[in-house]
Amino acid sequence: MKYKRKFIGYTGLHIQPERFDFSPCIKISWQFDPKFWHQGYATEAAQACLFFAFSILKLNEIVAFTAVQDIASEAMMKRLAMQHRGYFNHPKLDQNSPLFEHTLYSIKPTDFLKNHDEYDLNQSIHIVQD
Image 1: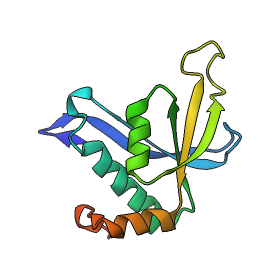
Image 2: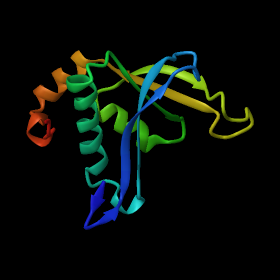
Image 3: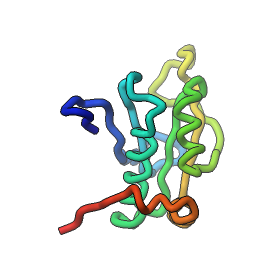
Image 4: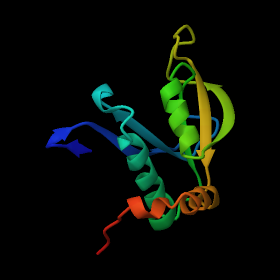
């Protein structure tokens, strides 16, 4: 995302084919410059990304996960109406790492679109198609 011609962060979908017990899956992730936190940019971008995933790509489920200490990202998953699926240990991290334990969320198209319509979020998403 750009703000006044400056890069402020990203949101995107990532294929996770074999890395986790719950793979294959498609993961949504985001990362923003802390100066732009709590301004709605990440939520709006994630909503647009989920809309694209379900309405255009016709995906069946999207997951998100983060280290259990990352309360801000977990709050975002809840704002997106994602459902908690459990905890897991990240296979790429050392078991002594403080970031080893992760929390897992997911959302299906019906849940996203129901929440999307219920809160009239369609007004904020504009997908340009050829």
